[in-house]
Each structure stands twice: as C-alpha cells, then as structure tokens.
Image (tube, rainbow, N blue to C red):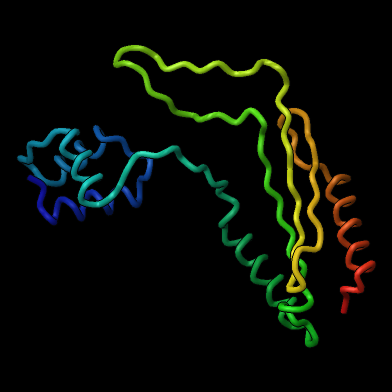
Amino acid sequence: KLTEEHSKFLVDYIKKNTTAILDELKLKLCEKFEGLKISTSTIHRHLVHKHNITLKKLEKIPAARNSDRVIALRKAIIEQYKSVADMDFSKDCVFIDEAGFNLHTQRNHGRSLKGTPTKSTVPTEKRITFTILSAISQAGIINIGEVKINGKARTRTEQFLAYLTNVMNTLDKNNIKD
C-alpha cells in the first residue's frame, strides 16, 4: 500500500515530469523507497482514484511562449497602454479573437477488441478549414467574419487586414469611436 509519503513523491515527480510513464514512476519510487514492492497498475489506480491524475493527450507549448523575454515584452506593452491617460479599457477597446475548425475533424483515440487495432475511415480529399473572426466591445458584437482556408494554412495577413478594415468600417458606420 502507498503511504502519504509515497503519494507526495509521485505527485511532485509528475508535476516536474508530466510525460513520465508508469514504468518510470515505479522505478523512481522504488529507487527512493528501497524495498518497496509495487505494480504499475497499483500506481495507476492510486493516481487516478486518490489524486485524479489521468493520462491525456499532451498539449505542447512552445518554450518561447513563456520565456523571460516574452513575459517582459508583454509587461512593457501593458505598461505602455496603462500610461495613456485618457484610455478607458471598458469603453475604448475592441477585442478580436479567432477560432478555427475543420469540417473533417475526428477523434484522435478509439476503442476496439483487445489485440486488434482501432481504425476509422477518413476522407482523402483536401480538408477545408474555416476560421471565424469576431470583434466585441462594451457596445456588443461589432463584427463576425468567416474565412475559408484550404489545407492546413492559417489565416493569412491579407485576410486578417481585410477583416480589420471591415471592423473599422462597422465602427465608423455606427459612430462607435472615441
């Protein structure tokens, strides 16, 4: 049976090594606590039932996203906006976001009988991706736009600039400006 000390070790190890597999956890646990006899299935059950730690598809975050340099740049931009005396974020800001989706999106995991692979038929034609662009402010929804993209390309600069032009035209047309 795993003690509180074992649990703390496992949780701490997983926080530092999110990609650790059960065999690695067993090895590290047995190295730390000599004489401990435990199976990987016991470790798995313990993590799931006691700590709600489960195996999931990994979200890969680029290292540069949270580097000291990028954090400092973000902070500098925020300080620059805060220094504008007549800037009222609740009235002067328009927030723009994009969400992309593919018409042929499918699950990445499946189930089948033990010992047999799981298969799914996928379309062979080029996939069509849609990007929805939206602009909102305190006044409400300003503009919603759709961009259709073939293949895996993302929204291109020209498309985004055209969308921004539409947003600006909508603001002007409805006299929503400061």
